[in-house]
Structures are given as C-alpha cells and as structure tokens.
Image (cartoon, rainbow, N blue to C red; front, side, top):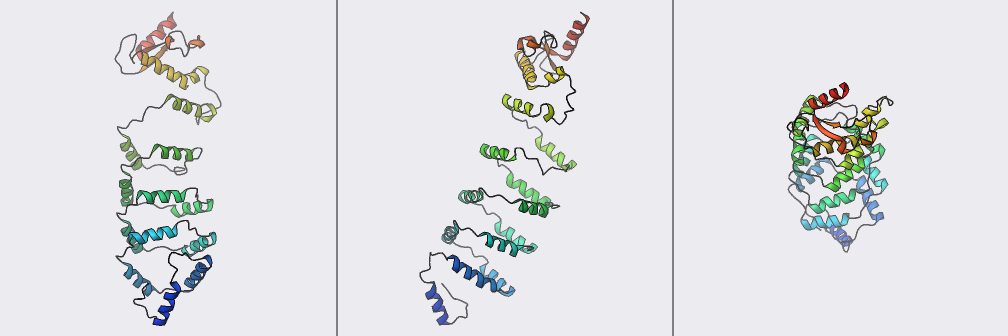
Length: 311
C-alpha cells in the first residue's frame, strides 16, 4: 500500500500498515463494514477533492488481474434490503448533467461484452421481477419521453443482423400469452410510421402456416370469441363456409385439379371456386368429400348454377 501525496506522519503510516497486514484476501465482517460505512457517511468529500480524484483517475484502467479479483470478491455478495433502500433514497432526485452523461457515453463506446459476461448478467437476473410500484414509477418516468432521430438510428444499427433463437422466441411468446399489449393501448401510428412499416414488409412473405396452427387460430376466434360477434345472427350455411375445415377442403380440391378450371381449362390465374357437384345444402354428408368437389373459374361456376336453377 502506498501513501504517496499524503500528509500522514511516518508513525501513522506504520500503524495503518501494521493493521492491514494479513488482511489480504479476507473479506470484512458485517460489523466492520457497518463501521466503515458509518465513518464514510460522516465524511464529506469537497468538490475540489472530487475533481482531483477524477483527474488522477483519467486514462487509468484496472488490469485484467485486478478486474478478476474484484469480480471474485463481488461474487455471491448481496446487499441487504435496508442497504438497498438507503442507496435508493440517496439517489432520489439526482440528475446527471449533460456533460456527465456524455462522458459516460464516450467511456462505453466500442465496449463489447464477452459471452461469459453476458451469461453472468443473464443468470443474475433470473427470477428477479420489478414490483408493481417500481413498474408504475418507471412508466411515469418515461411518459412523454421521445427518443431523438440519432438515438433511434443507433438502436436500429445495433439490432441489424441479429436474430432471436427459437428457444428465445418461445419464451417471449409464453411470457406474453393472455396479456394485453399495453404499449399500443390508446395509441395510433403516425402516417410516417405506417409508411416505414409498409416499406419494411415489401417483398417479404410469411412462412406457410401449419394445419395445426390454422385450426388453433380458427378455434380461438370462433363464435363469441370473435370481436365481430353479434349474438349468433348468421346463417348456418355461411358459418360452415367460414370454418377451417371448409377452407382446407377447398384447398385440397384446388391442389388436386392443379389450380385450373376443369370446365374451360383456364390458366392458373384469376379467381377460382370449389364447386359442390351434389348441392351443398341437400347433401350434408358430402360437404367435405373431396370427390364431390370440382375447381371452376368464376364464369363457369356462375353458368353451372344458372343451368341448375333453370332445370
């Protein structure tokens, strides 16, 4: 331990040195920490001293060995609830000046956390949740706050090329199930925002949905679960034609006929209909029989129904 730049007498320096001998690697007891904390609480560092300390620390960074030692000391160390409250109270209402924020920003520029560091941060947060009171405070603090264009651009650049793993997506999906999207509650997107979303989605196609997924979606929005529900006033025939079972039947008929009108042999384009050879309303048992379906274009389908009505 060095005493360079201090005005302590040689006797005092010797006494301090003797006291600290053998302490290396031994953590302070709770009683010792409390005494140190109490003595530091009464001690007030002048602004001039702080500036000197800041100037002295400029350009200095702890060695890798020192950082590892500090990391080991901090492992499994938890502040008591009382200490956390004291820290919280001492920081209340404290606002960093712009100069300080800029210094912090510059100090962290280009800093890349190692995978081990990221893993440690992730593990330290497992099982921790903000209380309802804390969430409300954060919400109030952020109300009316808008990020600058520069900030948004930086965030966008950082996220480019990043993809979430399937496991991560599954966890996010599970955590949001049954919860309303409070972020968009009572908000409307600006025209500029909509335009950006539109441009970002151009040329992108969603992957094909599985049959199981489509059935689940159908069940989730059936009857009273649908926001268009009006008490059950729709006709039965129309309701059946809106089911996933009916849509899958249509697709099966189209695929079998190569998406081509079987009457006029029209090209694979335009609007197609899946026609029931034996009428839908009279033959309930054949409604979803693929052999009772045939692919027709709009005009051919119209002509067949007109002939059926005239017969």
